[in-house]
Length: 232
Image (cartoon, rainbow, N blue to C red):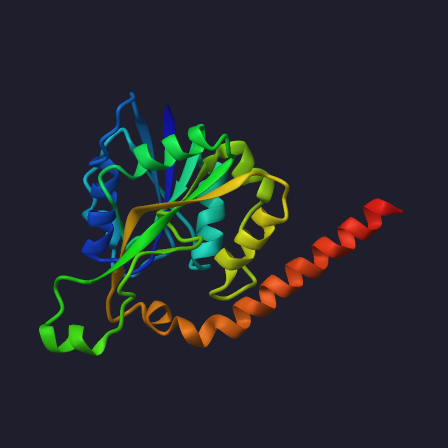
């Protein structure tokens, strides 16, 4: 089985090395070929230069356009039968691919969603760590490291909307739910989501809820119009 893991990166520093290492450390009960696609979003910190090369690693470059465009680039270049998204500062748990793949088979689904568990980045001092907030229990949603699907199914949902700042993943999930494809939420942790000083969008997610709700309403309205037109 071949899985393409798509990782957009921008100023990830050593976090990127850990993200890639977590892919390479996957343990499965079946033969696994990993295609790790890292998309350098014109990162000024040169984080991709810290990576150890290998036949499993493909590094792509683009002008700075954001994570959505980078993910889309990775999707176009992926050759695996299955796609998995991962952020440059997060880490897959060692059996993430096994869990997601078995969940896909057992539920006869097109896409499965795992769960995430927050952790405070290890380099932060106790004082700084205490100032950051993290979810105390695992949670499920569309997040990099949680979404795994058949390549053709992911492409059927389509590319990420790069015009939506910070809400492109919520928009993609809404389109998945309206696509007619079968998706299943698993009650198993597949990714450790890093909380650190430069991802305050994650720390203060509550402030983004209003825009997320707007995206979902827009997609629901589009689906209702589609259903109405199909009935004519």
